[in-house]
Length: 125
Image (cartoon, rainbow, N blue to C red; front, side, top):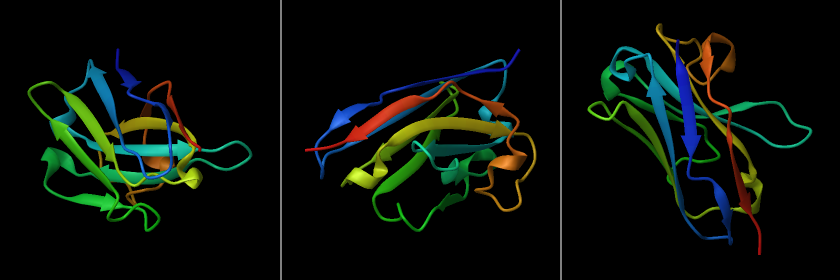
């Protein structure tokens, strides 16, 4: 049984930083495409960042390029999202997701078939 467990969310002031973690059980992340998605109230879930099989290539939404960094630790089977220079518009529930095949487009949520329960990120002064 595949289980993804996010942690690291919280409340932070604009300009602050957070690091999200996603521990994965029952699945080897080095053999999957992994992604971070977010969903704000009243909005659709959107792709934020993704990392290819083995971690060789990373992908980012334009809205987070230069501020967010996706990475993975294969030994710990854990995915991370380092978020810097946070803005109020980054406020959302953040989810990690996995798929065994390359999603097309890579930040589309439709091809990811395993999801975590989410962790809330709130950016406010």
